[in-house]
Image (spheres, rainbow, N blue to C red):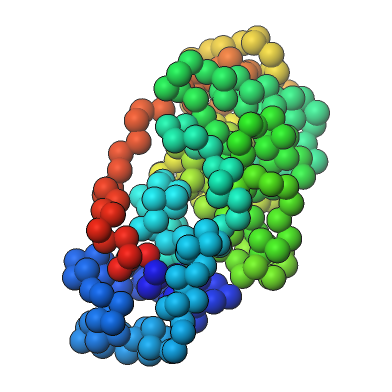
Amino acid sequence: MALVGLYLRGFGVLPWRGWRNIAHLFWRAVPTFAEMPGLLREHGYREAAAVLEVPGHLDAAWDLIEGRRALSPANPLFPARWRQSKFCPPAVWAKNLSQLPPAGTRPLAVVGSRQPPTRCLDFVSLAVRQLETSEPGLVWHVVSGGAEGCDLAAESASHAPVSVLPFGLNFARGDHACFSVVAPSEPFGTMNAMERNALIFAFGARAIVGHCELGSGGAWHGAVGALRAGETPVGVYTGEFVGEGLCGDGGANFAGAVFPASVFPGAKGLMSARAVPLRGVAEAVRWVQSEPPMRQLFEVDEVRLASVG
């Protein structure tokens, strides 16, 4: 609750810088709500202590959490892979959490251009449908950004998509689960979109780029950032095949391979940054399914949820 009260944009008042230090302090000490301001002052966090002492502020934060409108990393419904990421937000707005995918499904980030060639949209839709109906234990769910083009193709093909949005949830469409780090009434903004892109890639255990423009656009910059961060493997559709077609080696030897002229320039660019080329749906499905079980950095302790959340 404290992190929501301190850092939830549009509700909390503090910038995110240094939030992990406060989270770790609460995690170690497990203070009661009444003890939090004193503990913060003892460790030099006077501004944070003052925020929590505002009459009714913690009660309002609790109402947001209880109403499933806001989450912190301590909440069991908070995206697990964000906890492992350097991009992890201290608090997020949430909507339609009852529509989250079933437990045990794995998150697949799917992004791409707003106006891609039709074969890219077909590739994304077919890959998502196959991955969501795989054998038990290997079922995936889509995480995307709600934009026109590849994002909506992936979300439309998914039974239980999750959107990470670059604007406030007051503008969210549909009845599927949504997250945003933006205040509820805040409109779309370029900086919000860049932050959203990083969070989409950080959410996924694997990421597929259906199409991107070379050197420009959110899909390109998000994928490059993810490849640099090294947290999520990225595969990119090369534009050769849509159906079962060519399968290949999943990109293991792509560095010395020669690709035909049909390969999109954006895909070539990402491949040079070590993205895996995906030449068809079958190859994409096999590559995604090769993802090993996720390693948790820490277990969620129910006893500590109240103090950290």
